[in-house]
Length: 400
Ligand SMILES: Cc1ncc(COP(=O)(O)O)c(C=O)c1O
Image (cartoon, rainbow, N blue to C red; front, side, top):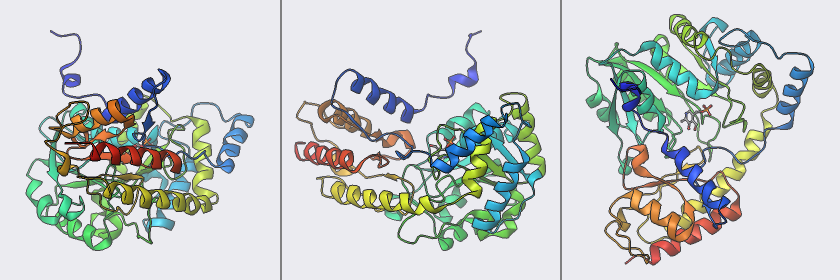
């Protein structure tokens, strides 16, 4: 009998957190490193949200709350889902957790039995497959293609579904590619799901508000009302409101599932931080004006990064619709050798050599299930991005 569980042996630590940690360590050791690995906005949390948190402390709102959140925040979430997505939910259909991550995890823990399959499009957010494994299920990876801007087609989804499929996890705009599905592209997928009534959809709308060039965000239950009873709509305040450290995520869906998620949370972490919940009420009910202001900055950075990466030898970088990531292909760099003498056989080789030889930290595509690529987070200053992309151009030009 081993001390650590067999379940734990099935999962690996988050590679994105590993890259950020390594970059921070190298920086602390005095190395000139630019980190493009972090998945969080570099903006401060808006002042009105911070003020609401301070007011909550002063008002003594510092005690336990209901395990899955205060009714005021649940109501703010219902109002948001109606306002932004045209979806009607009652507060009984809403669960609030410690970040979007916990919400997704609770839902998988509440529903998966051994052998249950979860279809995950690749490239995927690193945590999906490992969360499924931790919950005892089996991730089934459905690979999207670069030619289709890393978006899954109806045929690719159809081919991944089996009688054992319990969930389809959908994420648009995507981490790591930034790809956003328009209404027509999403309808093609929801049409497939309508033909398979045993499959539920867990939609991760975390990057809903981070979209550019007039892109219209849509979510599955909005595009196909017939899926309402089979959809768990997940979202959070981390990215759009620059609140990653506050740890508030939420989901809306069928009452029975929400109740099951509450049961898990009540026996594990209990309520998310009371002060953060009051801050999130202000985030959702207060002014939304700064989202557009921040998006102008993100869009400018995206355009610069895409242009500079496409100018690098061997790199092809599509222009994504949203989030703050790009996912360039490095097929043209494979098989080459770096000035430091390293043969590039995988995208992990590329990322490691880029960090060691040029001091630029990116996350290799293998971590997201589709290679050969790397992910750049452009949620950092223009100056850092320009310097980093120049170094990437030099790195590629020096390959032989
Ligand atoms: C696609 C996606 N979903 C969920 C999360 C988790 O968000 P939170 O920080 O609220 O747990 C992230 C964070 O990186 C993400 O990229």
